[in-house]
Length: 329
Image (cartoon, rainbow, N blue to C red; front, side):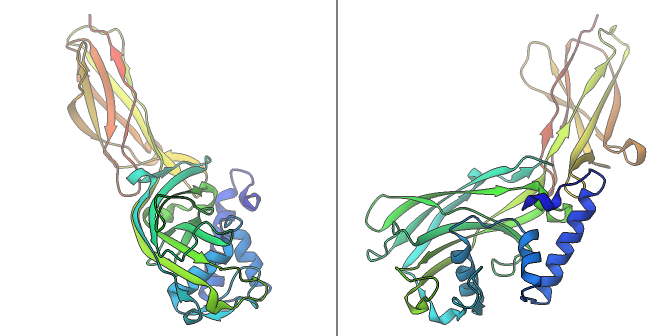
C-alpha cells in the first residue's frame, strides 16, 4: 500500500500532495461510492488487521451518526444508539512515554502507548472478539480527524477481575505525513465487545462500545539535526576561531532534510576538564542559499569543546550538535 508514494526523489512530494488532496476531497464530499472509497483507502495509512471494524464502530459511536464499517458497509450499517455503552473506562493513558514524537524522512517510528482499563466483571476483555486499540490523530476530534494512525489490538494483562494494564504500538510512517501535519496531535482510545456476533449478520444491540477522546495530547515533530565545526585547530591563544554548523529538519513533502531558516541557535563552550557547557552567544540560522547555516567567531583562550544548541519549536524538536574540541597553544 505504501508503494503508491514511492518514486523518484523529484516526484514523491508532488505525488503525496495529490493523494492527500484526493482523500480530502473524498472525505469533504462524503463520497462513499464504490469508486471513491478504494482511492481513499489506498491513500491512507493502513489500519491493522483485526482493528478496522472496531475502529469504524468506535468512530460512529463518537459521531452519533451512521456507522460504515470497512468491508461490511451494508451488514454493519447502524445508528450509533443501537450499540450499547460498554461498562469500561480508560485511564493513565501515556503516549510515547510522555514525550513528543519526532519523525524523520524514511524510518517508521514505533510509538508505544500504555493505558489502564477498568471494566465491569461481566465484560470479557480477553474474548477473541474483544478489541481495544488506539488512534493517534490530527484534528479537533477522533471522528473528524484530518489524518491519523491506528494501533494494532492492544495486549492487556489483568491485575484483577475488573482492572487491566494494556500496551499498544502505533506505527507512524513519514511516507504518510506532510509538513502541515507537524504540531499538535491527540490520542483516542476505544474498546469494542462484539460478544460473539457474526460480523456478516450482526445484532448491533449486542455490540458494546467505549471511547475516550481525547485520551492524550502531544506533538508530532519534524526530526532535526545540527552539526558543528570549529577551526582552525590547533589555534594560537588570542587568535580567531570560526565555528560553523548546519541546522536541518525533515521535510515530509520531499522526503529529504532541508535547512531550518532564521532560528536562534546558541553557541556553547565546555572548558577542558569540566562537564558543563555554558552559553557563549546566540546566532541566527541562515536563509536562501545559506538555509540553516549557523556561523560565528570567537577568540581562542583555553582548551575546550564547542557545540551548537537549538531549543526547538512546536513543529521541530530541540537538538544539540556533537562537540568539537579545540587545542589552544
